[in-house]
Image (cartoon, rainbow, N blue to C red; front, top):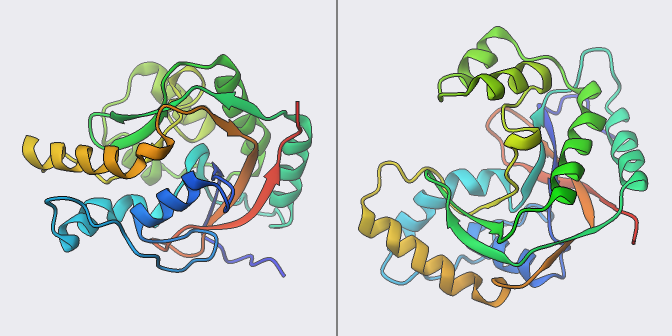
Length: 238
C-alpha cells in the first residue's frame, strides 16, 4: 500500500542496480537508495574517513542520482497513486537516450559527474518530465519561495521558480550526478584532494557514454529523511 504521509517525491535518473555506475556511486556515498542500506565507502587517499563522510553527507541523503524533476510535495486532494501512474505514462511516451561520456566537474559549490557534451535530447527529456509531473506538485509556499531565493537567481530563473517550483528548468537545467555537499568552506587543497579521490574512484566509468533508459520515483519519507528509490520506470527502446 502506498503511504500518503510521504513528505516529498522526485523524478531522478538512477543507474540500474547491476550497472557499475550504480555500484561506484552507492559506495562513494556510503548508502544504496534502492536497498536503503549502508554500504562500505571508498578509502579516499589523504582524507580521513570521518571528514570524507562530512564532505559527502548532503549528497548521501539524496541518494545516487541525477535530478529530472526536483523534489515536490503532492498536491492537496490528489491520491498518491497518481504519482506512479504519471511516471508510467511518461515513461511509455519517451525513448531512452545516450549521453556523452561522463566527466568530473567542479560545479562551483560541489563536485559532480556530467556529460562531456550538451544534448538537446536530454534537455527536452528533462523538461518533458517536469511538465508531465508538475500537475501533481503542491504550489510552493511563500516561505519556500523565500528559501529558494536566498541564493541569487536571475530574472529567468526566478520566473522558472514561480512557474515550475524550481529555478533550474528548461535551458537553465544542467544534468549532473552530485558527489559532494558544499565546498565553500574548504580550502583549495581539500577540494583538490576530493577531486583526485573522485577521479580515481570513478575512473572506470569516466569518458564512457551512458544510456539514460529509465526514470525513477524517489521519495523523502519525512522532513530531512534519506531519499530512497520507490520504483523504476523503463523508457522505450529506440
